[in-house]
Length: 205
Image 1: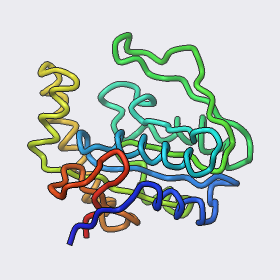
Image 2: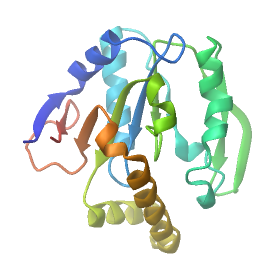
Image 3: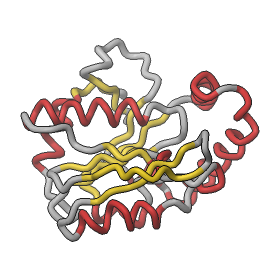
């Protein structure tokens, strides 16, 4: 049965767990496009900031690391080199954002400081290769028709051919990786239960 849970309580659980990426607790928010990963990651980061009384933990979105549509799953070496390896060694990381308009990486670096928590959000971020270093892994899901509608509303109908390819790639990856069965928490990105969505999320069984 689905259960309503508080972001604040989840933040407490994250901070109570051990750091596994050097001194940093890495939270991976995975799931298919349009499921609600970005919203979940942002609200969890806000809850972590409120609980710690310090700064908001960095949220790295893998959409910013993709070298275009064809880089759906092969961006990982970039994330490893720019962010994960430095934090693992206790050093700050930094990455350059990809511009989907200019179709290139921008020169300005986005710093990723060493801190108690790092939130990484995007398709495949809870993949098997990184699970030993994750403090918390989350899979956000929603019905395929709703996810497609959300993506088209956000990015425009002209992306539909690429989006269909993208969805096929997601399905193949999640099936091969067994992501949803392996994560700590599965979140309903289109819940029917009434709740205050700014403070609570719905956990799926």
